[in-house]
Image (cartoon, rainbow, N blue to C red; front, top):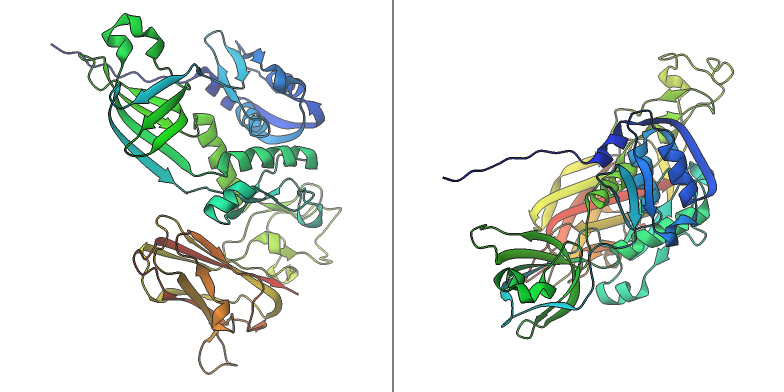
Length: 452
């Protein structure tokens, strides 16, 4: 007879997710002070208490703002600015360490303890040119002193992979710089993982206790035939057959993602894509984003509207004619799933109002497989009453948007052939060329136009 147990459990860390912070702000405070302050805001009993914080983190100075959120996410944001691993142990103590696991020279290799091995490389999320933004809007937004940071070694190895990340809880440039450097270090290389069918030597012979693997340990993987000779971390250990405990499946990677990393990535995505309510006055008023997916309320201002009374606006009292378009920007985005094929997209976008532009910035990404054998070439066509037929916005065909063969991203700078767009003018995307040996797959094309 065999017994199978299903166990469902919540980590003690999750208790902090139910502790709401109405308002908290720390300006140039030590990390140890910020953690102590956040834990002091708990109301539940028994509370999570402060355990061990690695000495290299305790006296680092950071700035953090948490409004209307919970303690767990506040700690998550702080950790993103510093690094390391957080956990709450069985004594309800919060611990923050720089490393986990061991690094004592263990090996996995054929003719010793490897039965089979599989390697996977993922370029999703690769960034080697990073533009980072903190709290604030417009000219008041916290930015990097140099605008961006980059990793020259990664650029030389993989090409240019620019991207932007936003963390609205950061209120000081020094903290933003530290956070951006951590994010760049995390994302400057592709995620490389190895799935290994291996033999747990310590389960066969207790004298091989040195060979016991634990989560987080650094392990050397060597395979002369496939050319593997790397040091990676153990991120998962499975024993698929408990009757044969020496048989195990081990997943190793050049990065060790944890649940906190996954939640941090989700928060980064939310910061990037969410249309947050936009304050109309510096006091209490918030108007929700417009339903139009192209334009958000961030793009609008309210002129001298008589409904303003000391910065307080009653709900639903501002008519449409009181809104004035201030910074016309739009981001048409085309998605072509599957393998890239030559032809026009079935989706088009209309210009929301007339304006002359100083630039158009277009970016294309193959979210899955890069083109091989030839570049992907993309054109964006524009038509209105001024043109008998749609014309390329790039003018010279040499200026069209490209994804170079062997790469997954491409972009253009200010290479406009058409300098003025009219109300309800129409943009259409056309793929002129795809990779010859591998066409590329899951293509996203984004166009950003900015006003004079």
